[in-house]
Length: 336
Ligand SMILES: Nc1ncnc2c1ncn2[C@@H]1O[C@H](COP(=O)(O)OP(=O)(O)OP(=O)(O)O)[C@@H](O)[C@H]1O
Image 1 (cartoon, rainbow, N blue to C red):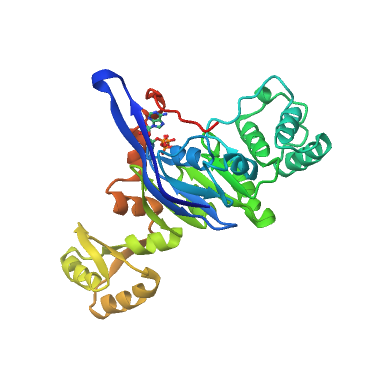
Image 2 (cartoon, rainbow, N blue to C red):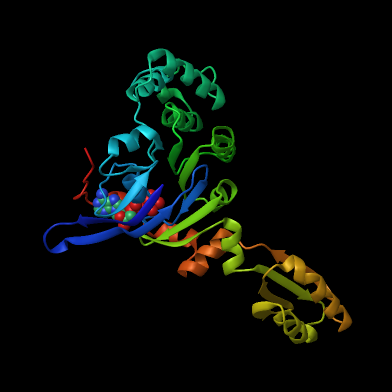
């Protein structure tokens, strides 16, 4: 999958209040076959809008994208046939039984009734929905419904699957369970997975590569480990036994660390590859006769990465912009 200069603008409000929102502002993407890519960003960053352009639900204002080799505008039908899309809201289910919903969905993609039924049963078993074929979705738990959404998205065996916040609203056990299913999509079926999420631990655990979008622009694209290595380094916190020796300890730490600061008897700094550097530091402190009460090494998190890239914490940024869904829709532009 590839995108070049993808842009989406929306017009919101009327009259004097009319303004243009550049929801996606020149996004380039290169996603390789069999990759699991985590697409991260705060509320309103442009994740869903990007996904909707890639899945042909929204015509790009500018730029191009090919998905499974098909152009999202000129060959939208082929794109839709070749992908699975599990949207944020999940499916809107009728009164039908879960199994029938899945079979109907498969037939929409051109499977025969027999093939859709066989594949549906296989997915129910794989997604731990055994025994729920006859159940109406409205009588399922949140986790079961979400897994049913995923069964619908996978019924036609797509090689590329888009998952928009697959685990939002699920309890920790249901999330862990779904993570396992998502990992197996790749390991067992070789599927490419493009996943948006608010959860840093989810992106970290599942993704081969992380893309961070902020204000409609990609601000980082790399493996979680490389991103963490590039921008932060491990946080090393030394607790010095004697307050009078804090300055000397800070001086020693400064030789291997960035932005060293002191706080009472604590000396902290960011050290690239702390595991390699710490033994030498401890030897030096020992040689200088400086005793420590404790030493703590914190690995950088994706939130540290986000903070360095955007100047904001992803956790803080999330609470700010809940207005997205409330904005007036003036420019839907779906491709028909
Ligand atoms: N149909 C629309 N009309 C007007 N503005 C829109 C529309 N859809 C999205 N926006 C705006 O575009 C920006 C990007 O929204 P988008 O839903 O893509 O963000 P997101 O990263 O998916 O956020 P979330 O995490 O909340 O789902 C936001 O400022 C949002 O308000």
